Image 1 (cartoon, helix red, strand yellow):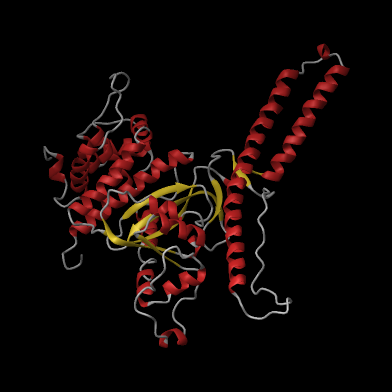
Image 2 (cartoon, rainbow, N blue to C red):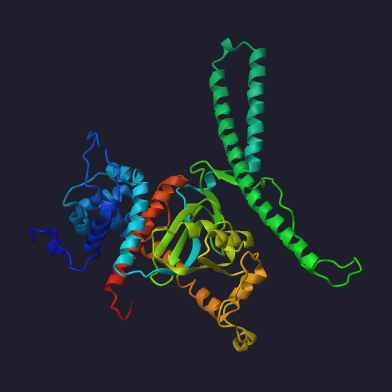
Length: 456
């Protein structure tokens, strides 16, 4: 048997690339350490980072599975130099280094640009994917049911107190304080759930109200610009915009196992699961994830600006950066705000779902070559976005969206096998998602490195 585990691994094994990459970026990263030196044995943070990246690349997400691999898997034993951090040590390192993981994410992208694996960012595609929370949808309660149960338990407490006054409780073994405490605890939990649903609705209402006021303003401006004669009976065309209500839907739910997760619809199916919405911005050329974060929102309507701002400022960018998004992101106010705050960004976003392929009319339609010149301060509208898309340049940029970001989610779910979070709560699942995206990027860098210049 070889005396060195390195002799058991091929020269081009990904493990060597992971070790080199982590060593290259770790000088700029501060990992969490127990400086008192008390407690369990401490391990080199670089080694722990390498261990997590390789484990996530090879479908090992549980700290128990990672610990076991330190005894049975040769590449894992090579990383740890035959040492065996236990599952608690692995889990604590993962939970205590969120900021360090974010720094590693950024430093790896800078390394990719420095080594030529990724060019300056010119076009990115944004999208979201749903991933299961570590909670069952059957452990959720609806707004209507929660309020009914609160009323029920409050009545029971009153009845217990009234009944206790009528009878001599010394003749039976009923523990009144305990019976009341059980119901008051349930009331407290349910009231907290109701409060959470009301706060979520308030956030949704504020966004919908902003959109409604904007649409009404656009309609008024359009009406003022229309100088055509009218007898006062002419009706405005199109569906009347309904004013939003600040009212919680009776079917709105909150989960008791992971209260920060939400029931979300998966794709075009009628399948609803307890999940989180994970956002990602992917570089069109390199297919690397350059921006990412988790959200509780069930759709992508309010996420465009956040997704653009999740791309680290340190990365080199072209003078103009195009951002491609599907119709789920279209919000005229948010697109306008994004482009106003980021003058180097131009959004190319679908305004509605279109059938696959071209119609006969589209085949013979002659489109302008370049994107239209637009006046600064001009308001965003569906018509304005359609004009951008109805150019050869706009269609060329947008056509790459589907082949950029969707395959990335496919690789994460099918190849890496990451389909459900192990941790609970938005902050904790953010840590897991950071590790997933770091591991994906390292795998992608490794693949790009091994491509011939012709293929690159």
